[in-house]
Image (tube, rainbow, N blue to C red; front, side, top):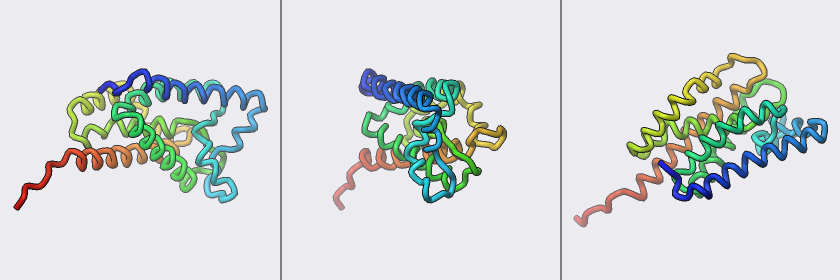
Length: 194
């Protein structure tokens, strides 16, 4: 499905990705000191990394690797409208951050890939929860292009926060379920008078 306002979707999602590059430029200029504000699992003095981690990246390669899937999947996730997209993004962001904070390996975790994984799982299951054939078709196309990325939820590579990927993926499923519930409530047939 095409977003209701494709230009607005491009501006919002593209603007966010541009912000990631601006923050990485600032981080580079500051000698990568911003990276220390990511998620430090189970360190209560550093809980606010949950809020900042998706904005921070380990370098240009890292931010670039997240930018393209964020643009594509983020744009597709706006199909339900901008307010739904912002709610879905908030749910995924929090799940990814809190999950990483709770189960992450020692060391700083950062990057937008948890949100990207959340968008991916959201798009893969949204059509099932809202029972929409066009959204199921989009899910199949998304899976064909990005399905192999799902292996990133397994601890196969050191230096990759699989915990963030897994937690973001769970957040995407929860967000899709909530969207489906909301959709069913707004489209439910009124009860017949008895």
